[in-house]
Image (cartoon, rainbow, N blue to C red; front, side):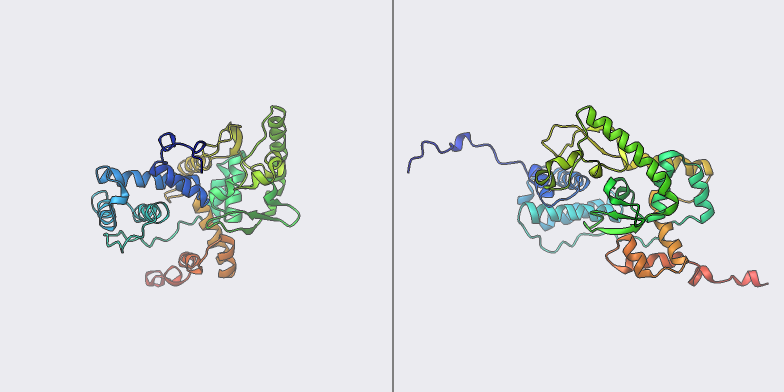
Length: 333
C-alpha cells in the first residue's frame, strides 16, 4: 500500500487543548453558553490551584483539596461549590474519560431559605414604576411564572393568542411546557409584535434578519433563520455574531436579562422596599398566589416546570398556614 498521499505525522495539527476539548464536549451535549464558560473557568482555577498540573495526572485527592479550599478559605456559597464540583466531574468523566473515586471534600450545605414573595399591592406598585417593554416583561413573568431567561428566549411562534397560552421550549432540563397567556397582556403583546415585525422587516431589507436556530435545525431548514416566527419575541437592540458559531453573519439575539433586572432593581429602590426583590421574585409570587387561590400543587408544579413536587412544596411554607396562620396570644389580650 502506497503511503505517498497519506498526511505526514510531522505536519499533523496538534491535538486540541484541554479547555478546547471541554468546550467542544459541552456543545456536543447541548449545554448552554453560560455552562460552557463556567465549566471552563472552574477547570482553569483547578489547574492553577495545583500549580498548572494536568488534571490527568491528578485525581480525587486533588479535587477534594480544591473543594475544601473553596469552602474553608474562600468561604464560597453552597451553590458555587456545587457548581465547581459539577464542572470537575464533567471534566474527568466526559473529557478525560476518568471516573473519580468518592470525593470526601468538606462540602458546604445549601441553606434552606424561604422565597421572597410580594403582595398584590406591592406588585401593583412595582408595575406602576416600570414603563413600556420593561413593564410588559415584568407582568409577563408574574402572569406566567416564567424564569427570566425563559421569557427572554421566547420566539414569536411560541405565543398562541387563540388558545391563550405560551409554549416554553427547552426550559430547565431541556423540557417543554405550556403556561397560560394572561388575557390582560394580549393587546400590548399584539402591539409589541407589530413593532417587532417592523424591526424584522428592516433587518431583512438591510440584508440581515438571521436568528440563531437550535442544534442542527439550521442545516435541516436553512431558510427558517430569517422567518418571522423563529425570531426572538423580545429582541436585542443590536446585531451581534454568535461567539460559538463559525457563521460570520450578524444575528439579532434576544434581549439580555440584565436589562430588565436593572429596571426592577431601580423600581424597588424608588419604592423604598426592604425586601430583596429580583425578577425571580415574580415567579415566586406567581406560585404562591396560585396556591393561595386554591390551585392544586401538582398543577403549580407543572406550570413551574419542576421535576420534583418537593421543590414546589416550598411555596406552601409562605402561605398563611402553619406558623404563618397562627394568631399570637398577645393579640388575644
